[in-house]
Amino acid sequence: MTALTEPNSTEEAKAASDLRRGGLVAIVASLLALAVPAALLLLARSHLEGLSLSSTTVARGVALSVVGGSVLALLALLLYRRAFLHLRHVDRRIRPSAALCLVGSVGTLALLFAAAYLAGGSASITGCAQGPADHALACLRSHDATAGYVAIAAFWFVWIGAAGVASGLMVAGRSFRRASLSAGGIVYGLLVADLAVPFAGLLVRLPSTPYALGGAPVAAVLAGALVYVGARGPLRRGD
Image (cartoon, rainbow, N blue to C red; front, side, top):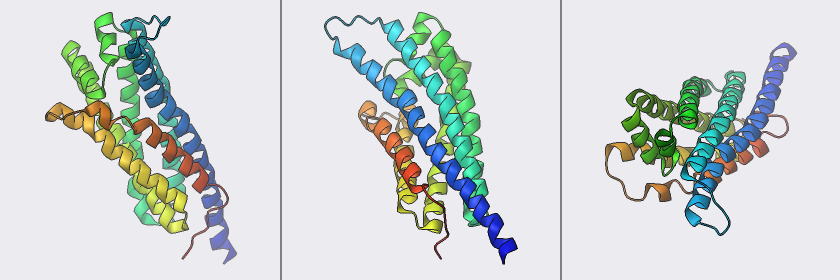
């Protein structure tokens, strides 16, 4: 019995550690990739007295923030995927989630390329970073079709990866009876649905896309915090 139990407990301890670190990294990534760009755009539109920011400066700051957030998002996806792989002996249903995280990692690398292209491009291209995500994608595609389609594909791949994280956390939460892990998966699932709006906006006319994305930074930070709390302490299967 010991020979069978000990490896499992070791794998579960590794999974808990990866989930905790993934949750913390995801929080910082969410702040850089979502909250900071939203704050910069809000400051640019508020016209505060004494605050003089050119549109190019704001757009470049948004793009650079997204670059930093994308690097950390890639790390978070890799940590989540490794945690799911550690838990595959507990519930085989978590294996597809690990595969989806790998797809998301590929998308994050492509997103890094698109964000770096925006940050280092001409003023007209850099200006694409202003406004909602559907505007940015359409603007980038109009200036450089290849970069635009790479960005759109990257967002879809990242979206798939986020769906993998959501499903994996919900499976892990049920397997170990950790309500916080399940809640984190649910919040990630809501975030996935929220982020689908910009993509749909490229295909059909949708009202108020910026409003739909307003809660994304809060949801992303909350999800990471729930994962961190849920992975504290040893994971023990509750049959």
